Structures are given as C-alpha cells and as structure tokens.
Image 1 (cartoon, helix red, strand yellow):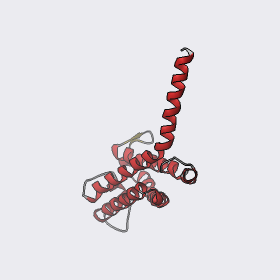
Image 2 (cartoon, rainbow, N blue to C red):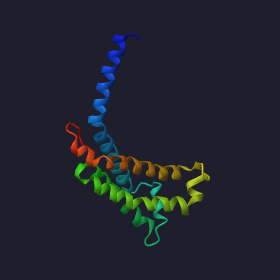
Image 3 (tube, rainbow, N blue to C red):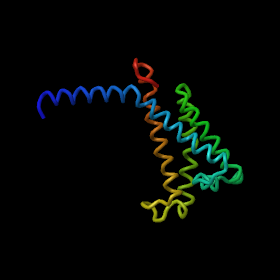
Image 4 (spheres, rainbow, N blue to C red):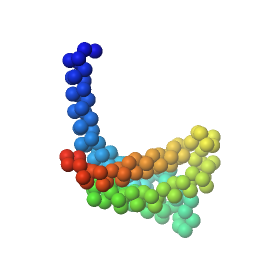
Length: 155
C-alpha cells in the first residue's frame, strides 16, 4: 500500500469512526427498544414465547396472567429505552426482570437445555439472549454521564 492509499484509508477510517461515535449509542439504544417493544407486544397479543417458561416459575399467579404482565413490562422497558431521559428507568426494569430469567434457567433445566450446560434448547437460547440484552443495556448505562458531556454525540 502506498502513502496516498494509506492516507485515504486513514481519512475514511476516521470519518467512519466519528460517525459511529456520533450515532452508535443512539442506534444501539433504539434497536434494543425495538426488540423489547416487539417481543412485549407479542406476549400481550397472546403469542407463545419462552417467557411462558418464566411464567411457570412464578407461583403467585397463573401463566395466563403472568405472561401479559411480562409483556407489558417489556413494552415499558422498550419505551424507556426509546426515550433517552428514561434510560435509568429502563435499566432498573431490566435488572428487576433478570432474576426471573435466571430462575427459569435454574428451575426448568430440563426444558432450557438439551444437554446441560452447553446445549440450550430453543427456549433456553431465548432466555440466554435476555442476558445479552441486559449486557447491551449496561453498555448504554455506562455511557450516560459521558454522553451528557460530549457535544455532537446524539443520545
């Protein structure tokens, strides 16, 4: 690679990196919001999901009542993620939901895993995905103060 090509690459790389810094967290937050709004709406509408499994670990009510509540909970998480000032509330709602996911993985091992612990079933994969979504939300939460101080970075 000659010097001219290298400088063009560096200029392109810098522009791309600047664009990702400016827009990345906003896109990240809004796509997470979309996932929670989508999955929550499916539960409220009565479509079966792996969250039905979580509902079977709740002993104070029936799954028929718990699944729509979990759906509305996810819709609330999605709405809070969609509106930046509510990000801290979204993180709290997610943190409160996480023990239910963990409980389902522990109490329903036979349903969550084809071969414990390395081969999760479809239901198990769905629940494990919740941990990934929580981790992604933590990344956003870790940047709240930083983004408030950076001009040009869109929340």
